[in-house]
Length: 344
Image 1 (cartoon, rainbow, N blue to C red):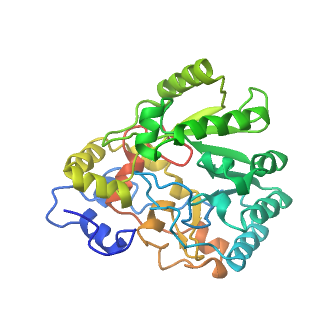
Image 2 (image 1 turned 120 degrees about the horizontal axis):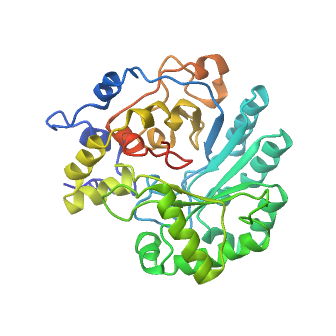
């Protein structure tokens, strides 16, 4: 089975949802797992993070990417939509602006978003692939992030070149190390520094990540010994069965096995704390979603809430019902998974 039935870099969301929701599958519906945990329907507990996906343009094409981002993507958030995001922050007390992509820094409005978020007194997060910091057009980017005290959450699949390059492309590990050294030189990751630097680990294959504390200790020891690199913490994230990783699962014959692994590892405690309960995700076109994963599957917020940032309504969005599906087992398996790493 393959998702590549159309001449488009991203498999249609409808096809992905058809596979994930195949009625002939023996998978237990995620709604049943929630009901058994007395969590159905899953509902928002408020909004403490406005996560803004500013587009799918990226200087890398990672094999696991749930956004299917790359250098040839043209989906880019406009200034008008970016202004609507800042307007929503201005109208609320949402404390965190989490900017993601693609490589979010390649959006022409990225620095404006950062400046506006900081001016409003919000905590700004940049989800960075590291190599973008070395592009000729971005030579001052690391200094810009430091000057505005932006928290950097940086992807690094492993502390060895072979495994990193296998997932992200030849030579990416070397560039990532150079970028981390640059960030360290500016104060990022230093023990007492307010410039927060976190790394993100996700498995290369069809298995769950190891315990977060254990793999963090490995990364800390190896990166310090081999490269003199320091960081504040490491987040483990489970690969979601969507987009490129779903394609890999189907191509390698691992789809059913991986889904059963996720389902068997369902953790009610993780389900209670999933990020969609306190996060609102904004797509590059301004559409609203419960999370970045629902965004990629084109599953907007529940019809009882506004579906575009132009219609932002705090009361309706803070009390919305969360839209769920089989892919949600990815965030609720084992210790759980979120943009802030393991949950429990």
